[in-house]
Length: 257
Image (cartoon, rainbow, N blue to C red; front, side, top):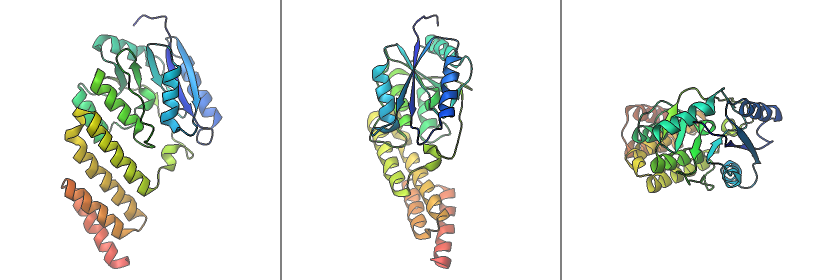
């Protein structure tokens, strides 16, 4: 896609969670792109990462807006490849992945392995007017791409960015179990409400959520709570692995409870 208009790149940044040198590396990876860019760094505040990204969208005055987490780095020609794909497909969203339809994309986001997409997102603001849900402290990025794909379609490219994990990141710290449960339930409810393509897969998400919560409780030796979560998962959608995990936690609760 030939354009002299820069791509606005929104980077939410919290110095409590991202070292300065990682932010500097992220910005260098933007400057190294083969298309014009303007970088908008928004420091996380009371509104959190979702709010910071929304502030960035509001500040951007360009047609194309991309997002990059301050921890991550883009590969060379990342934006050029995505802009070309957006032009060819006529869609409004491009992310890293290998899916060929909106339905496949929604499935992979909700219950598949496509759960690290934020640093690959590019949207065409002529087609996408979606905002990040600020009531979510987790899954807000996934809800954003689900909504955008639902209204404007989605295209994908492989190998767009380097995910860099470190001990002080929000992902590494995580949420307390009870908050994670409530955030997951809210995410699923919003996806069910706002994204028609998501509705067939919401029960599978709940099964996965309660299974993961059960595993966490078992690892923390809260065996009775683990049994409760596995039982919920099975009531929503029977699955052999959840049954095996329930039996294991039940045995442990009898032996050590």
